[in-house]
Amino acid sequence: MAPDEFAAFAGTELIAAGRAAEVAVAARHFADAPDGRTPLIFGADGRQTDFDLRGTDEDIAARYAPPRRSPGRPKLGVVGREVTLLPRHWEWLNAQPGGASVALRKLVEAARKDTADASAIRSAQDAACSFMTALAGDLPGYEDATRALYAGDQARFRALVAEWPADVAAHARALAGPAFGEQG
Image (cartoon, rainbow, N blue to C red; front, side):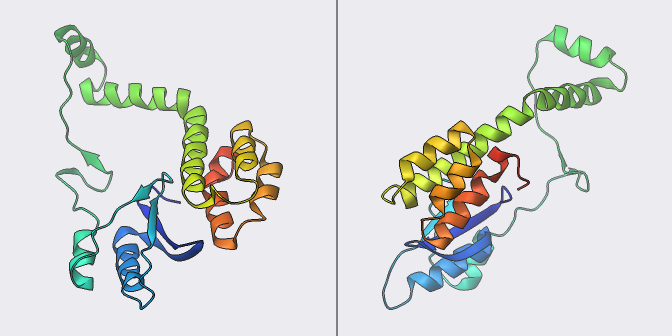
């Protein structure tokens, strides 16, 4: 699941998944249905998210449309921001080949590589756990599935969530996938 994607559930049924605007409009239509159930919306981090579903479809879609890119190098996703450092840090950065920006990018990339695997695993575990707590906390095998998730026992995790409603199990597996080395 991409960081800017969401999933809306009505009970244990997935009613919409995708970008914020699409999910918000679908959730509003579902909430307007005669049974009046309010869907729960989850982000890629597995946490429940509140969407403002007031107004027309166009109002909602505009409210959750992707933000416009700011000046910089839009094709590369470069965004200008402020960094506060001590004078000695600026001196060192400016003395590096390519200047401060190049040196900072290299330092950040090196740090990301050093911590990427452990961080990605922990983020996936936490996302799956947050989602599972909200929608599967009362389902059989929830506690054991959570233990298997954090223990890195993919086979046991999959076996336990297989007993859950299909949409809940599929979403839990998708969120947990990177914790087990699967591509998102």
